[in-house]
Length: 385
Ligand code: FAD
Image 1 (cartoon, protein in one colour):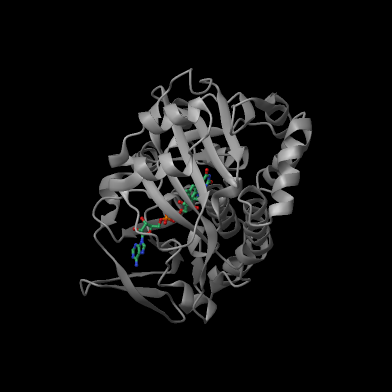
Image 2 (cartoon, protein in one colour):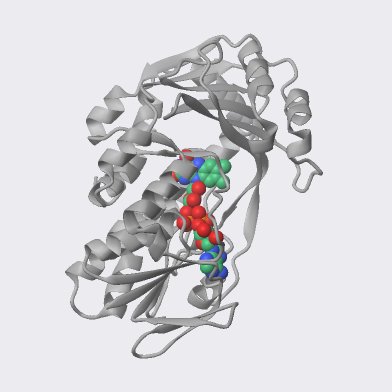
């Protein structure tokens, strides 16, 4: 049995690795000739880490992951600490650590494990067709590929999604812009073993450690869509938006490299129940696009991959039956993650100003218990809990 996997991002590569572990042949087709991830880094929470462990990637992941032992929130003006707590109770209760990793490192790890030379780069799928025996994908260069089934991991702008769900999906602007990048760790900005976040005015500035003595940083600002801002204006834009913020934030703005800082208008898509049509299954952002507010989009893609492969391996009533079961196991979980992230987004970014003000007050009384309980619930909802 052979699977065609469309897309060589986190979702596609995890799907290919998981399917091969379950005894399927795979062929991965990726539109671009070199993958340049949209963000600088990603936090892989224990539900995602367990999926990578399952794929045999535990040791390389640990080598790439930052040591994120603590979590702290600071007020934006003077920078005073609102709360600080250890992540160890979370680690102990869920049985795994979180690992923030640079995206380029994660992508290289996945490609190397699969065999980068095996991926068909520069193959952009234009449309697909299925019949009783399999699926054919056509590419924009006029070539085609055929397999017994097809996994569409072609991201949030998926061209295959409408052929599965029967309708186009509207991307919804979440109301804020995110700038992100990597910068050398500097203890005078934030401790090297801590996820540190400055909050105020519906904005956020956050730092997480990744390997190579680097911080993954991001800035969030609620803004209208479509402003004429890009890398050439990034330092001036951040200086303006974060005027009056505490010294560590000013230091960070001075330290960033504008030429490698990404600016992203954050979107999601209303959850939809159909992930499968016959021999074609959506996976990762193609099947569920979320705001990054609970850091679960990529983790959910890893979960999809593991559930897909396990379901195919453990059911013998045929591909279509197994894919339907994959959909049944994933649809509610991924809808829940998208909606949880949307709710968090609105509180964090002043979209619901009353809720945002209440959250800033809550942080002053936060012992860590409430935040860690929320994370624990999300993590334990994963397939390898
Ligand atoms: P993608 O990464 O988009 O990959 C899709 C691939 O398909 C691409 O390589 C693309 O070139 C290819 N492709 C597209 N169209 C075609 C076509 N027609 N034919 C062939 N190939 C095609 N998630 C977390 O878990 N933790 C985090 O901390 C986190 N932080 C985030 C921060 C930001 C700012 C953003 C924007 C997202 C964040 N996410 C996070 C979400 C995460 O990045 C995504 O969920 C994840 O990258 C989805 O992987 P994917 O493989 O499904 O899609």
